Image (cartoon, rainbow, N blue to C red; front, side, top):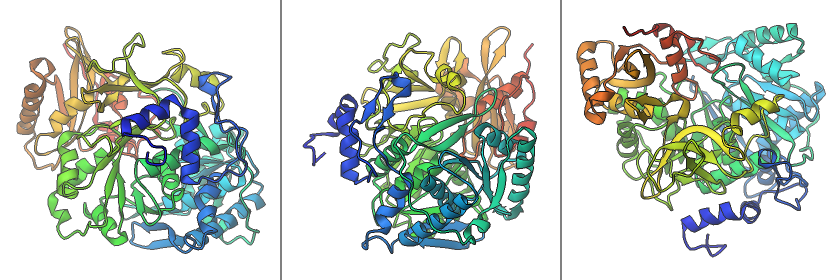
Length: 613
């Protein structure tokens, strides 16, 4: 703002949306993002908004932006670039110069095995190894296909086949909750199943690549629209969708977000508790490294051996930025404040969060009890297909509990009604949409452009439909209320499930909850509520009474849950999202669709069909 003489933050947001060519050009110059060949045009939407190309006559390589600019600079080459901690406590770290050399050799080893520009290479690895191999794939101009490291063979096979992957890089075992998991066995089975379906995918151990004597590889010259990432997102029905992301748009958007949302810069140490198979893996990798910050990864359960693991991670590695999910914080808060006793968190400047709407109680716990009331929670929201964020807290706007702040810079978000008319300024809840293109948006669904257009562009012609319920309050702060296909319609009133769940988890002894709409022969739709108690010794009848009272007190008798059950766990993705559609499908006795992203599909076994007389 100072460089461009912009008076206040709303003015910057407004100009970034009105003048995208100016804004993205300014971002690239301000952050020093090195293009291999300078572009002459920022955006080309001659084929329509859905197919907008960015910087497309220029060339830029994601790996070079993250590594080479720092490794070639004597002031930065010997700073730590990547520090990986494993569940057993072991730590591996590399400087920028070392990491560039490691990645160059891995790229050479992949090239020696026949990987060429455009080939899809899948990853079934822990996060620190996944970072190294991802950057090596990008260096070659090939396409990284990260797969959640906890998937079974069936889910892995689907992605290998859909992406037409030629190589799957994996590891013999990983550790989760103190137990060894045979990752290579899963990879071999998935590859065998893929071969039966006509896709020949070679399984390679990451240590084999490391020990290769292949010559190191410099970054390939990659035109900006060259695909670099195939990121799979679960569909409500049918096979997962492969969102296509490219070197130019993804690199620029993520570097910008790391700088202007998370305030990452050389000397910072940033960690997001995630997996490369979720979009936050690539997000934190590029957001940190492209801005010269140290990327800290953790491979393991964040509450193992106890709920103090996260806070000890902050202390051991002097983290300045920690990314979490609301679900994780609910679990850590439920475990008790005593796990924070003695933890030295002085290095920590800010939290990041995403994945789902916050409950007020847990937001305040993180802000006050953990953060001491002085560390902001940078709540962001986007998605796998977004490649980054649509909405973000920015401290120049201010920080409001549970809010996702406002429009991310350069993204023309809006809230609309069923007819596509804007609801901003009305206080009403509506659909979250985007009215113009942005660099990080997917370049389609891999192998299925029709599905891409039908999913995101058919509901409101010329407008991106995101599938979230959103509202903007009188002060201009945005709030999300869950997926729009999760919305409850009770007594003619639409309400987000997160609001019901917040009332349930406000009761002491309730760790998490999932609220879904259930069909009723008289009332149309009623609320079904599945809850996880903090301890199995709690008297559930009394706890149920308190939950019902809390919901009624908050929303009135019309919103009294008609069905309330306690379960030991809820179906969640690895990123911590509760998959409500799966809960509802089981409850109404229909096919739950794609369940491959669930961390523990067995959690659904406790959910049985519900009928009302």
